[in-house]
Length: 101
Image (cartoon, rainbow, N blue to C red; front, side, top):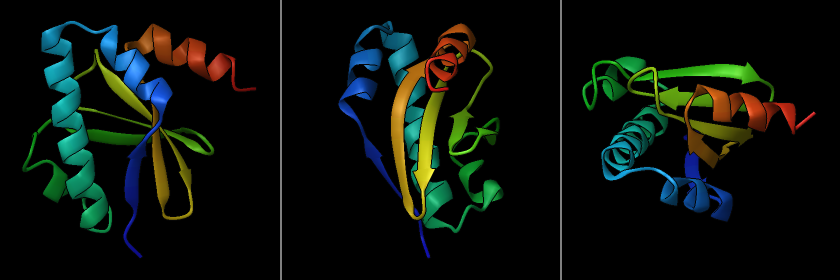
C-alpha cells in the first residue's frame, strides 16, 4: 500500500521561518519524499531526486527526512498517512520531540 504525504499548518508556519535557500532545500526534501512514498519506500528512487536524501525513524510514530544534515522535515506516520509536522534544524527537531512526550 503506497504512503501519502500531507502538510499540517504547523509545518507551513515553520517553513515561513526559514530563509529562501532553506525553503528550497525543504522543497527538494518534499519532492524526494513523494518519490520515496510512491515507490514503496525505495530509497534509491528518492536518491535520484537528491543523492543525499535520508529517511529515518526518530521514535514511533515520528520520522525525519532530509537531503543534508542541517534542514530536516519531521513526519508522523499513521498507517499509510504521513503528515509533515515541522521543518527545521537539529535543535528545532530536538525541541519538538521533547514536547511530544
